[in-house]
Length: 481
Image 1: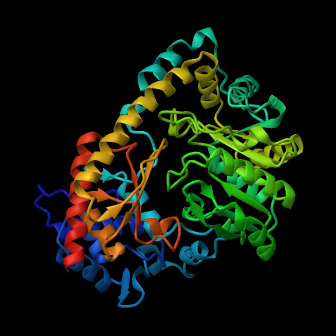
Image 2: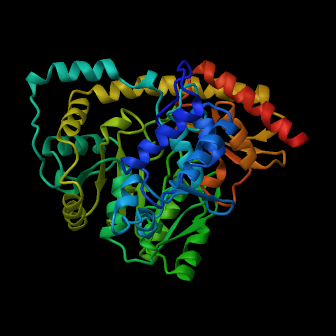
Image 3: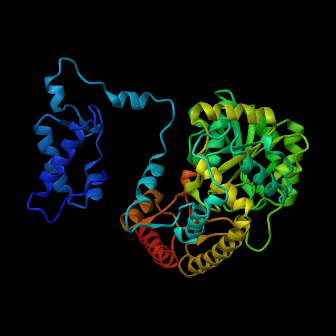
């Protein structure tokens, strides 16, 4: 609920809560059949005692608007109009449950809600801190827009041609030689995955990927009845010696990988492993989706060339993005692929959203075309490296006896393995109540329950200090219980 009671009002809190729920019911926001949040959840969201919520819900049950039981929770069963209607209103809950797209994992839903709560320390958030986003420079670019005016209409199906030309030039700098006609502009790399899932693959296909992987935390492929088949990793990246057997055993359609500063482990795939991967996939005729969103976030040395830079057989679908480096709000990414694939994905994209924002595409083109993007990357790398070093120092201070980790050479993440046996769901809940938001490893694989994805990219320095210290205390307390 985005509403909060007025603690200074003379109206009792339970009455305010009751009236607020009645309003949501009467407006149809909570339709008949809707399961309302649990009592404890409502109490936490509203900042009141649970007994206050219980009183409000009891009154609504007595009035016939709600119905509660111990197994199914509390649901809306009536509204004022329903009492007068000749036939019952639609049961929207049944429609929601019938939808073919899977809902997020409960933990992901809770994280998405908690990220916008005031005062929360976000230790796992995979995006740049607002302090690192170039807001002033972006404002200046728009103020100077008269020099290169932008249009407010739709762009062509593949995206703004000037932007695609700038991306072509940028990609040449990392060894990828392509043309604007083989590039599709998308609303972030996630949309590229969605387009691939519905445009290139059959329902029921199997996808090979690293385990753990960010792809497990979203349902873009699973919602099309596709199976994710996890390949083990080591310090050099995905274990290529398993690919042939797994492909044959599962009749896999393609392989998805994040070779540079992997999400969530931070692993950088070595040059030798990249060569092995390309050789094996070429021999197997196994296409690759290369998600390269983090490659520019290196610290001391650039990563090896992308897989796409060594792709004479057009095996690789290459995904790039500005979300992790420049601005998540721009929602600009790209796909590099053979032209028939780009034409197919562009056609589907036009059916879905009629093209990414023309204003965002114009802004992205300006950043690339003026050379501002490369200047900004230097700043971001310096800041992220300082944040990484500071976080590692904090881990050495508070976690050296309770966890293990490797120091990443770039990206956002430290993959923290707890060496104490504790219930991770309890750690997640208790930390959240104390204002510390975590990304548990179970989001990224069911086999990594004793891991946490720690991000040094988002939280401020003082927040990292407070949050990591509090987290270490909670872990030790849970271990003693």
